[in-house]
Image (cartoon, rainbow, N blue to C red; front, side, top):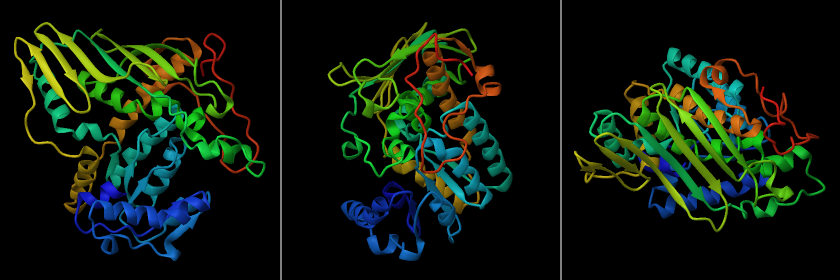
Length: 383
């Protein structure tokens, strides 16, 4: 919300919704405080009233019924395909936070709705903001123009802390919380709600990988597990993954990801070609070798720029639609999780077009819902 307000003049926040009352109760002070910290005109931006503040599982429907142009969808990704469809059917432009689904069924639904948005002239902007980081844009342009020759191999690495204190107040299930309410409060650690961390967070990195390679992969073989984040409050997600992605030209790229405290941390992509090698992270990029390159131009805040581009397109009646792009990047992450969970190598065409995997309850409501056990490769079935 704050990045959106900063991005363009004349933005007004007119409605908000959340499933939990306490989130809605604290939202006005949090939002106004964050606007003020960026020295933005709070009263000109914050136009939410009690009549346009909604609570409950149907809060998103009530938000969409308000007089507004664009909606920002930031609920746990399990809900993204359903809420995205509702927003496009309501005729709203959409900012959809990444990832856009947790399973192949959801990815296919999102793509279908993205095509519907294109037919209706509506914008779809995903939260893959690093595509608007100027140094990354420049480096990938140089890769595509052949400065280092054809990519022959590479790495995509993201190793960081375990996030063990995330929403610590909800670590233990309270007697008054149903299974689904508890899981929703701990959604980051529940696969059917988050997709596991490779999908929920590392989609950023895999999105850049697909962009650099000019295509999603055609084949994936992955492994992973949980060695540290094993307590019940950490649900059923893994704390480490590794994968080998094969791309259409037969080139194989290695991915390594972890969320474990105390490990050596890294966040970068590296590519090797016959004329040199490229390095990209969220703050720097360069190419070494026969034709060296380093970006030294201006920079922007990519999290703000994505909203600036989205709103400019809406105002100019030139809608941006990056729905299929983010769906393919989400599927790239989902495919690795599916491979790691089952121990099976997967082809892109099968995962994208034929897999019937659908996580979570058929319809969400607060009540009993047993969480799936931690996946075990060789035992967990490929669906």
